[in-house]
Amino acid sequence: MSASGASMLGHTSRASPSRVSTGSRSPRSRSPSPSRAPTRTSGGSPSHHSHVTRATYGANWNVAERMYAEGGVKSMTMREGDQAALLASVAKHFEALKQIPDFLPHLHVDYDAVEVRDSTVCDGKGVFAIRDIEPHELLTLYPASNELSLMRVEKASSKDGEKDEGAGGDDDGGAAEGVASTIKSETYVAPQPSYVMFNGHKMFGDGNALRLEADPGAPLVSGFLGHLVNDVLPPPTDATDAAYAGEYLKKTTNETNCHAVPFPSGIVAIAASKKIRAGEELLMTYSFGFDKSFMDGVNADVELKKKMLSNAFAADMKVLSVKMEQLTRESLKVHREAEILSRELLCDVAGE
Image (tube, rainbow, N blue to C red; front, side, top):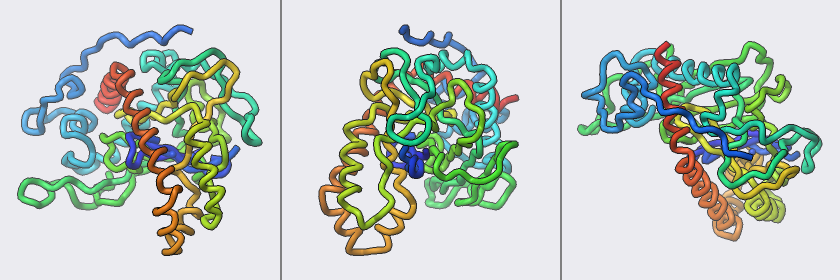
C-alpha cells in the first residue's frame, strides 16, 4: 500500500488493495517496552545544537548535518550533488537498519510484537499483533525495497526576496525544483505505485518529497513490514460513487488502529493509534492516498468537485486529517529520544 506526508507530519498511500502518512501512501484493500537508546554524542552533529545557524556551523559538516542546521531541505543551500548525496545517505540508513535489526529497539521499534498472517480484510497478507499493544508503540517500519526518491522542493527566499545562491541549476543531485534523485534496488523490475509511502516530516520539505516504494515480491525483512499493513476497506476508485467514498471515510476513520510516523532520518514507522489486542490485525488508513483515477475523476468534473468539497464528505476528510495529524504529533513526542537518535544515525552514515 502507499501513503504520503502531505499536510500532515507524515502520510500513507497504496492501491486497491493499498494507502497515506502524517508519513502518506496510495490505496489498497485487501510485553515490555523496547529498551531505550543510550545517550550518544555525535561529534558536533546539529541534532544536539538547535541554535546552530548556517553562519556558525563548520564548513566540513556533511549534507545531513547541514540539512538539520538549516531547518530542512526546503530552506538549506543545495550545493552541487547535495540532493543525491542526501538521498544516498537515507538509503544507507535504511540498509544499516535492515542489516542490524537488533538496533531497532533503540529506535523504540518493537518488531517482535507483530507477525505476518493471512489478512482478515483482503485476499493477501496482513500484519498481526502477537501480544497486547499500547497506544503509540512503534511496531514496524515501511520498507523502500523497490525504490527511494527525493524530489527537489522550492528553496525558501532570502531576505531580499531572491532565492539564495545554490538554489538553482541542474546538477547530478537534481538541484532544479521538481527534479527527483532516485535510487532503485538491485532487484528492481517495475514500479509499484500501490506500495508507496511518503515521509511527510518537515525536514524533507513538502509532504510528498521523500518517497519510499516497497517491492511486494521481495523477501520479508524483520522490522520492515509496513507495506503489508492494510486498510479496513479498499479506498475509493470511482469518483462518481459518493456513497462508497463516504462509507469508506467513516470506516477508515473509526475502525483502523494504526498510523504512520515519519522520522527526520527518512524512515517511517507504523504506530498503534489505540490499544490493540493480541491476535488483532493492524489496520491503517490510506485515505489521503486515494486512487489516482478517483482524484482525476473528481478534478475533471467541476460540479462533482464542488459537491465533494461542500458536503459531509469534505467534513469527514477534515476530521480524518486532523485526527491523523494529532496522532502523529503525539507519537513523535512520546518517541522524542528515538527521533533524536535517528538524526544522529543519518549524520553518521552521511559522514562515512
